[in-house]
Length: 401
Image 1 (cartoon, helix red, strand yellow):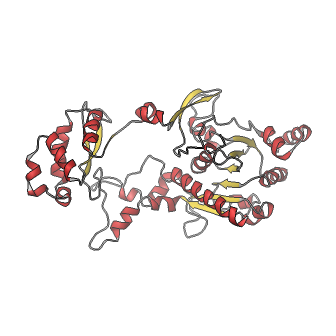
Image 2: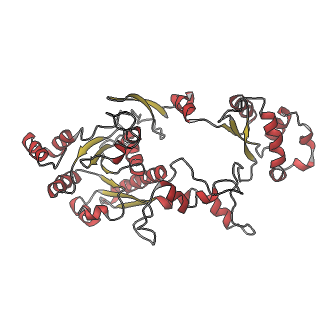
Image 3: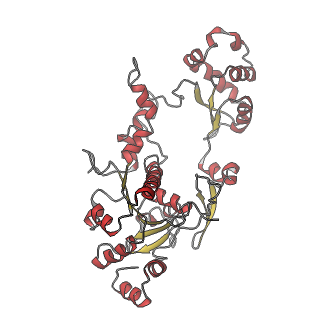
């Protein structure tokens, strides 16, 4: 069965996490993703390496479904080889620091002249314009500047980072949307265009509801609310048995009257059903601290999964806190191929995150990340028709690897 992005070719100059998140998704959806690496390779091949001979899990988990070509873009002949590939590409994506691609000789004007149909996609920390555009960027720094840390943590404590890569991975997903939109527009115009995603812009988008609260009449600056739901529906994280590190469940009491009454019966607090102090969602939200003291005392008699069965049975939204170990073993995620097994020649089998986008006519098969330069000969012969003698000569001159 043909994949959704079959026939589209991506030149992937990305590294670390934001760019590879985007290009791996494109590979999952069937694009031919050619990862163009310097002779030293993507820096994450060696970061947090746990097996001496194998690429790190950092690299392998972000670079599945790609081919690897080594070209030295600092040499003029390397630029020539890359230009030949660019003529065959639909998308060129990079996440270098500001101005790096320009200094390599591939400004937008140059790229567009080489291939007027190509889409040049760039992920930057703070964008290519604006007062912050020259600031170096990394995940936690962008969380701080994007407002995420300012709304995360407890009211009497400092701002807290999220260890979910919301800026990096979020930028990759937003870039995928931008690239797909540019491809659709190219169908109408025949022309490529530039697409830019800034990590800070993406991070700001994640706190849209807090920016809403900031502007509501009579509201002060939103405070950090810890594990409170922070919205109109009372919700909180409660501890359950046996009391281990992740034996918690997040529970919403729901604004539905029938759900509230069923929860009261389960907790043997039928008196709250008729009590006018708890009659409306607004009143229950105002008394949420009192309510959740009782809920947590009730919850201590159950495991998080026992509570999940009870709460889902009455229509109360809830979610057990799952550890990373539980995530990798979760039967739901395994069945949906959100967690998949991938075979790697040196490492053996490891678990990876599959494609979160499920298309009925474009099934995803996750394949191992490539070795450094694994497909150099294959790609240059297949796409450019380079003969063996030329490949040998280029390799001898250390133009390709």
